[in-house]
Image (cartoon, helix red, strand yellow):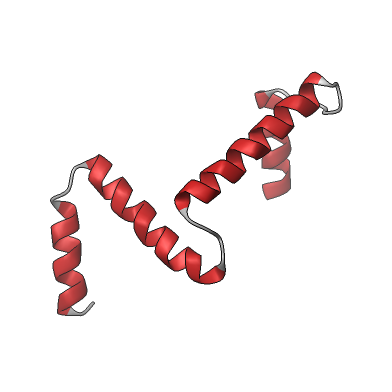
Length: 80
């Protein structure tokens, strides 16, 4: 790790958890933006739309719901 990066990391460690989260989000958005993922606000809006679509699907009876224990059991079987 070069000295500039080391100095930035040391400064970041002095931030509050909320400030570190904000820094992380901004860095992620900056570099993810290079790939066209969008700004944090755009990503959040897209997720909100997805959540609303999923809720509507459940309310229309179009989705099959699986409880937590069953979902975890399926995931564990896939991992093995």
